[in-house]
Each structure stands twice: as structure tokens, then as C-alpha cells.
Length: 425
Ligand code: BJ8
Image (cartoon, rainbow, N blue to C red; front, side, top):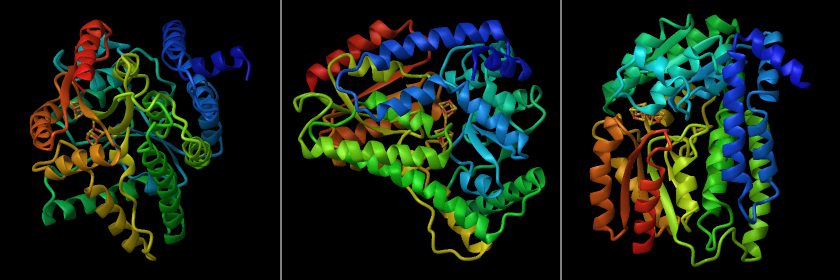
């Protein structure tokens, strides 16, 4: 598509073209510095470069084409929204979480300054008219997870006319599971009403199969990173995880499996993206929405390699599959409800399974240390950081807890702390 056709598309979506140009320019430069400068990248990473370079271009065109065919577009901010149902309703699901400081001043008119950067970012992108995904949505799904998000949706809802909020329980008792199942049903009804498509057993089975395949590809990729030396950089895997929320799920799965084939060849030849003496670090904590690449870049440019992400833009989103044995819609809805109730988000209390998951993941990936990543003002993850640190130190796994936001102001200071941590490893 020509540049002028893209501009016309963005104009039709009512983006602020001048501000959008500025955003793309900054992102392009960041991307070049952080990703294209890497040595020994896999050839399969070309797919990542292409998708990222076209994230506001070709992908948006595909979404507009899908809309023209009558499909509905569903935007989400959390891994609790069941994509299986969205696909079964013949709709497209895209992630709207944002990882850049854009529109911060406007966002701070709607939510307090001491709100996490992720929340301010999705509000800022909307108010500053910068996100073609948000502007393409027929329904935007929020959820009652942390207090910051819950209250932010009240303010955000005044600026979009299609917000739907799912109630996510805070505990995992039988009554909570019942509540969650009823929310899954309510979401199914809302999708059917919006799309006019009945979610039949056949359609839901296919939705479950597609999303499970996507998660299997991500599981395969994550397992391969246990190899020493590690075959792929953490930066590239973060991109894979970020793209998993934007790209067509079937295409994404095929591309990631191709990437895994290439990685298996690399492992068989005992080749790595870095030497086997490179310190191996696992990240744990808050999600890193695109284009939040700050910490992985600081870690890997300080001489370490990232081998895992215990995060929603990481294994928290791919660890569990939906049981595929259900035959009726009711059985499949139960399987979906059960799968999502396993998510170990820090918004749950108690949430001890997360401690087990962080520990076992660090061991399986042969990590030398764990860097806990929390966005400033994120209560759930900063609280849990204390428990995670205790658990890891009890198992002799070194860890470092970091709190930051999307600005680059603390980059030097963070680098110094990361380097000191790596020195200790
Ligand atoms: S399931 S982690 S995607 S809620 S960083 S907004 S928690 S103050 S993002 Fe999340 Fe769903 Fe949980 Fe995952 Fe609040 Fe913390 Fe901000 Fe956060």
C-alpha cells in the first residue's frame, strides 16, 4: 500500500496525523537501535521486523478489510478476555495495552498522576488520537482486575462509546469460579449480540483449537530457551509475545513454529545467540506492552541474556491450554472458565501459585538470576515482589526488584543497578 493510502486510512480513523508521524519516527529509531543492532539474529526474526514495521500499516488495513466483510473488532487490555469466544463469534481480537508515554498530559487530566504507566498510556493513546487499533474497535473490553484499571475504565468509558467491562473475581474459591463462569457466559451473549453470530459447538471448538495452537507454539519457543547457550535473545522473544496480541493468530502460529524449527537447528549445532558463559536472566512481574523495550534492552546491552518472561506478555498468557475434550457448548465454556481461573495475576488473593511458578520457571530455564519488573504505582506486583524475593532467596536464586515507568529518565540509574546485579551473578 502506498504512503498516501496509509495516510488516508489513518485520516479516516480520525488520528492526529502530525502527532502520529512523530510517534512512528521515534519508534522507528528505537526499533533500529534496540533490535536491528543485535548480532546473530535468526532469519525468522524478519517476520517480527515486518510485523512491527507494519503494525499501524498493513495490519490496520487487514482489520479495515475484515470490518468491510462484516467482522467485528474487539480490543482488550488483559489476558482474561477469552479469545476463543471472540474467534467463535467470527470477530478479531487485538490487544490495546500500550507501552509508551504518549498522551501522558491528557491522561493525567482523567486519572491521578500516581497511576501506573500502562493505564496512563492506553488512555493517552486514545485522547491524543494516536492508536489506529483503538479507533477500529467495535467493542473495547475492560476488566475489574487492579483498582487502577477498574477506576480508569469509568473515566475512559466517557471517551469511548463501546466499553464493556468483565468482572474478574479476586479469589479462587468455588463462589468465585461460579461468578467467573457467569461472566464468561455474559461475554458470549454480548459477542453474539454484537456480531449476530451464534456461538455453536463447532465454532467454539475451532476457536479453542486456534488459540491452543498459538499457545503451543509459544510454549515450544519458551522451552527451547532452556538450551545453553540460549538460541534467541530475550528482546526478540518479547517481540514475539507482543506481536501475539496483534497479528492474525493462525499466521502467527505458523511463523513462530517456523522460527522454532530454525532454533532447533541452531541448538543441534550447539550454537547460541550469545556465548554459554553469558549470564542468564529471567524477568518476572508486570506486562511489557509494545513498544516498552526499555528494561530488556538495558539488561541485554549490559552483557546478559534474557531467557524467560514470567508476565502476561510472556508465559502467564501461554502456560495453560483449554481442555479440548468438551463436545457441547456448555462443556467448552466450563473448560474455558477453568483455564482462565488458573491465571496467577497478582490481583488475586491469595496468589501463592505464582511463587511456585516463578521458582519452577527459573529452574527449568537454567536462569542465573531473576529481575522483578514492576511499573511504578502498581500495588499488586510491588506487594508480591517482597514475597517473590523471599521465595527466591530461600532457594538461592539471586533476584533484583526494579520499579520504573516508560520514561528514559532513569535509564542510566537502572543500567548501573542491572550491571551491579550481573556482576554478582
Ligand atoms: S492478568 S497482570 S494483564 S490485570 S501494571 S494495570 S496490575 S497497576 S496489567 Fe494485568 Fe490482566 Fe493481571 Fe495480566 Fe494494574 Fe499493575 Fe498497572 Fe497492571
